[in-house]
Amino acid sequence: MVELSRLLLAVGASLMDLRSGDPQTHVRGLAILDPDDDPGSYRDELVLVIGARGREAARAVRMAGQHGASAVAVKTSPGGERDVREAAEDASVALLAVRPQVRWDQLAAVIREVLDSFAVHADSTPEAEPAEDLFALAQSVAALTGGAVSIEDTAPRVLAYSRSGDEVDDLRRLSILGWQGPEPYLELLRQWGVYHRLRTSNEVVRIQAHPELGIRARLAIGIRAGNQHLGAIWVQQGNQPFSEHAESALIGAARLAAVHLLRRRGAPGRSRGELVAGLLDGSASADLVAGQLGLDSSVSAVVAAFEARGTQHDRPTLELQRVELATTVSVHMTSFRRGALVGAVDSRVYAVLPEVRTDRTEPGLITLARDVVAVLRRRSGQTVQVGIGGPVSSLADVPVSRSDADRVLDALARTPETDVATITDRRADVLLGETLKLLEEHTDLRDPAVRALVDHDADQGTDLARSLLAYLDAMGDVRSAAAGLHIHPNTLRHRVRRAAEIGGLTLEDPRERLCCHLQLLLATRQR
Image (tube, rainbow, N blue to C red):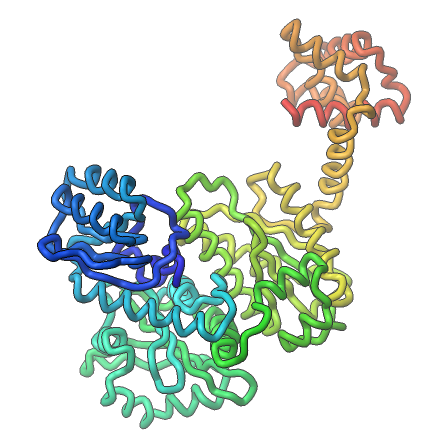
């Protein structure tokens, strides 16, 4: 069984997309329904409704739902989608819209291969992890490199590939349709020594274009674990040159693919995602996690937290964006540190980077975080912010760095113009936020003088509280505060005196002034 959102990610939006229903619906298999045929049992299957479009397909959709289908795919027609959508909702099935130009036999072949791939994965691991799924990885690498990606094992058999348009060459087309490269070209690669380099080195191999053979330029890298060769990642150049960071993206992707392929071969155990989550919250022993993932528990580490902001999308889009965020972070961070660990907890994605300096945050990490933000904004329009915690001396202290990173992200939520910040950058904001949270939770600590001032503004339509806050923010510099409020300095002086009278405030006392300042900050945030 595979979740529908993950099946869609693998098949690609260029073939079909979700129009209604639950993206977490599970699909067990594939069936084809011609409205002229007698229906069978479609228990938990994705049913392709062929030979009917629009309103004509509505009856077949209801029929498929009545016979157990979990999802139905149709080709819609102008003005007919509403009827089909209503039929799908009545039948409690997810509705997929297939692109008009897609051939049913081609779509069926792709879906069956994807379902088979997920079945193999499910047999060898306890759960599928979005950040490690080979199809999601291939799609992210395609976006990062600017090419069309395929991932192979040592056979070489194609395990996964990215979505691609009309710019693919015959080699890629034949490889995907047959799930294996054509033998004549494979022989040329052997003669050129490409496979030898992929088996024996960790470097990216560049292969020149051969127009006379109908073959475009490529990048390739071997997937290796120590001295063990597991497969390769290939990137075919499209209509544009490869991106500037294509090679570093491939290096990170090869390390992630190695983890995935090793787990497919290995025995079931705690998933990588569970181990990383346990390390982040302290519920898993650092020694256990290090032993399972091949790390040294005594090495230093730092945590970077990533979160998408302002997402107002439907559930399928949110799910795909979450997978894209996790995969993009994985590729970038693994290229930066071989032993990087990436895991998702709720809406946030965390990267644990080992073997870092403990005296400061490495500039390379900040640059890398900004690259992730820029890539996601360019690719999908996601707005992502990154909080980086303080370095810690061992993996056992990772929860401390994670807590710092979370606090930085919380502080960044109030400054949407900032993409990336460290705990050092935002320590004052974090401390202020924690203090205001304490005041908010303990109403007995509230100052009635400030409450009286805020109530007076609400009743009389005055602006005394905001004026007093600007004055305190400017540390008593009347001219600076007045300029920020766009009023005359004398007007501000009058407002400050009036505010003190109404609230009974003694602004000459530094302790009372500090208390008033904090209470005003809390009051203005709660509006």
